[in-house]
Image 1 (tube, rainbow, N blue to C red):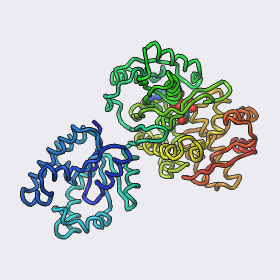
Image 2: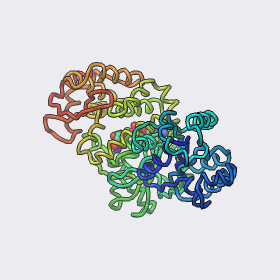
Image 3: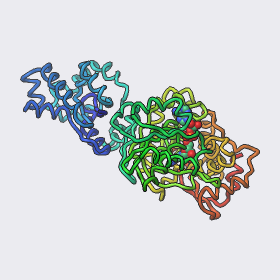
Image 4: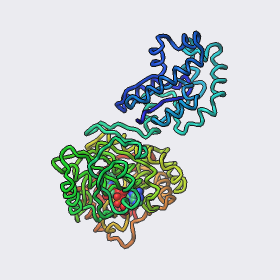
Length: 502
Ligand SMILES: NC(=O)c1ccc[n+]([C@@H]2O[C@H](COP(=O)([O-])OP(=O)(O)OC[C@H]3O[C@@H](n4cnc5c(N)ncnc54)[C@H](O)[C@@H]3O)[C@@H](O)[C@H]2O)c1
């Protein structure tokens, strides 16, 4: 059971944010204090006054213990509910505890009208609250997941809570959950088969097979195998293993495995369910989200595909520990892209370089995936703003293909982003400082920023036109305006975009 517990000092908005959070995650909301009051048949001030704090804490422990056995929920806890070690252990073993914190003036403002409801703060609110916060400082500090609540709306703080928790419920195209969690926390899933590639199988297949108790189809690794032949192998594998319309397939791997498994699932028996366990950084923050599936033709990438969102995405950053360094860097190109599109803070973090990234993988995954989720929820079928995610991809895809995949996807996107940013500056859409920031962050991460000299530019332009699935003279680019903002622009003069990429 993976409940979400909201915890922290009085006034942080555990109930208000909790209600918004539960509505957006489509989970029930429970306020522990209200449950205690119902059980006791009296209000919390009455319990405290008539029976004392110890009895109240006992009631709290009993109510909490009962709730952990119920179905998954968002649970707002009282401000001291986890002071007892056994309560904390109970909550932490049944879900995630998010500690809400806020500055003292904000807490005071919110609590001023409520002192009658909060017996521990009766009297001089200012000094009572300060001393309560002092007393519990090390206790509150010890919770690893924290959100500094600000004065903006509960809706906004609930969104920030989802980012910190790595929990989202998407409703575009179909309803499904996205969670950043250990795969082992999801034993109730019963897939029929796991699809993976030879590299990932070496490190992770046995463990995942044990968790899901399922057979597997293992295919060769790499973009050059993202083709119809491999998709056919998957269809055959599904047939040989007796999969029917009710079966669920797990895609365990990077973007290549995700795209092909999703496509095979979309088309097998006119569509079966699939779950994705992304194993590369790129697939955690990008490829596994949004329901685009497909494979390449010799003429271009992703030329055949369909929209078929998975039923669940479980991103376990622990799986990234076996990812080769080059692939991790490659994933960082998409992270930088997401920063440039709409999260300047994430861009700033990425600019700290690979050793910071390696120490903060979970944070990087959570923040970068949140950008993509926001965009695809707004525009699932790419009628408008979703095209922003193509930043760096128009040049990038072409360069990737012309390199015959010697450049990884992320490396190619990095080159594409640098070229497109320079072009944006040349046409006056952005300033040189934006270009410098993008180029320097990509270089700090060890990513390439120049189109290789030996690469024929006519070939890149030809591939760009095929890749964009049209032969029109102009191509629509997503170009940076500033860090955190991009604009969609039609470009005729493709040559000059490439000039800037050298
Ligand atoms: N569907 C979408 O919306 C979308 C978005 C972006 C990219 N993509 C696609 O994603 C693909 C690129 O994804 P990718 O970079 O993950 O490529 P990939 O799937 O080829 O993985 C990269 C390499 O890392 C290995 N690997 C993956 N996870 C590993 C792990 N945990 N430990 C050890 N090795 C591991 C793989 O075997 C492979 O060799 C491209 O085909 C691209 O078109 C799709």
